[in-house]
Image 1: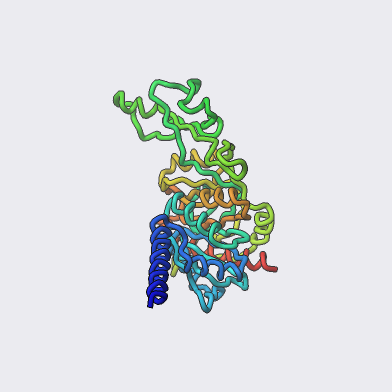
Image 2: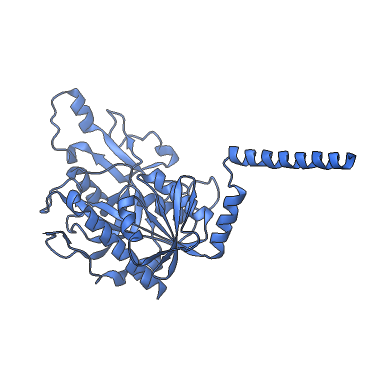
Length: 352
């Protein structure tokens, strides 16, 4: 009887230890043993192409495409508020994740994707605003470089272009990349009082350093333009003749949309719907697509040395002024579908 009693006490202690370990793992946000086993099982079937998409209306055309075949046993894995959809696209193994709006959400989702799963490359797609009036709604753009242009320093009133910036001595800001004088771009403001004079004389400066990139931890490294993968970018040249959608019901674009490799795309947490600012972004940075996620995805991939490329279909001329009225309201669905079409064709080329 004593042995039985002792055995039961040992069993009780063992159970308590397991419960304590479970409590600690949950309290500190560690990956549970069950989730870890699931992730290991997923990775045994890898590596995968990671497909990163901002929102549901951009993701749905891909999921509804006959090219997408969900995994039969495990079509998705939910973790940390993200759903990672597992399957195949044109016979390539893929994991698809929706980020949600903004740079923060895009960065977190991409970091989770690359940290949890065995990913050999990241393809990002979606719609975007257009800063280049030479291109049209529905065109799919593939930039060579991406930058985050949402980190600005708004200079103190009274200071001028030759005065030192607050963080300039640490190398945080550069005058050559981001100098915006409001009076050059916002023509609607009138010098009616001192407050408007204050606004007109203020300037913005863009930081050259965005975040530390791969290398020595906590060592400052300057990077503004994040490159996409050179092999991916060269391969994307073969999308030039791809046929894309032109019409929404009976409403059609002036010409058939096309795929265009361009020099630069930019991202920030600001939704740009202002023609003056659009013109500044194009003239200063030679930017074409402007969105709220891609630079974050690009930077995370760059940090982890994972090949990356983005396909952004133009849904509107930011700030208006084109010959096509009510652009985004009419053509967002078409733009999203065109981005999916380019993505699927690129995967086919990548697999061949």
